[in-house]
Length: 489
Image (cartoon, rainbow, N blue to C red):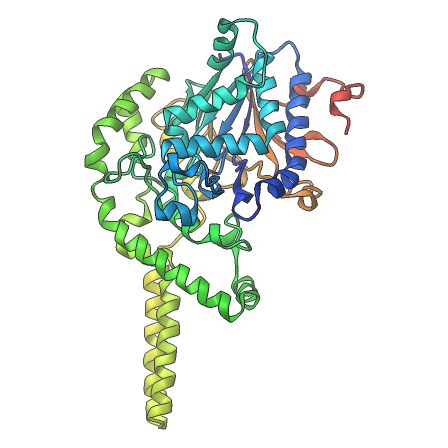
């Protein structure tokens, strides 16, 4: 295991465009991105042909929450769809997720065939679940993924097929090799995407359904219904972007968005009381899972329990945090302005104007400070802080996270590095022409020398670019590929 060379990627988000495109439109648009992934994997497979490779996808491989395709009416009876599912697409029940996985594999045939060929050639594949594909918790989803990949190959025997499937591992939380690396997706350190029980994410009151953190509720009941809202990068919007978007919506569109806003706000507030019974309801099952994970990675269960307790409390567990997450201060400020304006029109006087204006200004500032002072949307620093704490509990040279879509290389102490894979998010043909749009970054772990490389992938040149490395010789890339037809476009 330790001498394997590993490629670590994350945040591919297959299926995220399903919310706005029908299957045929989506299939046409994503093919270019799948070709890039195929060339990417082919490059590394041919780089060291005598080496056993392991591809690690560190979370958010498939964007299950944004896949809202509707089931054929002839099939819908056996799924017993609720009114909610008919309106917003299949939810996260086990058999519904199996359907979504099969549908995405049919659209991303080249992508899945590339993974299948990679494993068939004797390499291995490791999937860590993230917040967008927490559905990999379900046993039938794990098996369906292996089945899809195995169906793409011809095996000489059942044993050969079993060996193939055994080289595909789907982990419920972490991946750890003592004194070498510690790896997890990292969403648990983000208040907006953390789960009460990420390891066993079962809903406490609805049997057969997974819990939905704040981010999932807003995606399912808002952004999935709004084609021109892109969830990735939404936190970077300024007043100009917000104003331009509102102008584009028009009066009817703004009213629709306000209805979505208040409906989700009510749902999140109603969910606050449910959140408090998560721990007691799922505690025993979570404890058993932690013990199993600890045994796999040769970690003391008490250490893993400490790491699990480091998670940030989901914003949906607190009424105040939920209101802050919805930027309600702006609602109060706008409503306050119209109240102030109405008073001036009904009782016009200079005294009322200055007194009312002063009170409105002071109260607006106070409301803004109260609700916004502790709000931190971007989780980058939280993940670095988590890696520093974990480094005091588990020995490793490299602490690897994902989730933020920004590649990082930060020294956290004399011996260790915090690394973030960035993203392999497919964005469409025009944006792929920009070499580092969303980084297209990944990490290489040299299992023999215990070195690490932070890499970018150039779509124009179809080859990797070293961003940073612990190796002085850079001798990981000494293969001459000029005659390799596999790399030609």
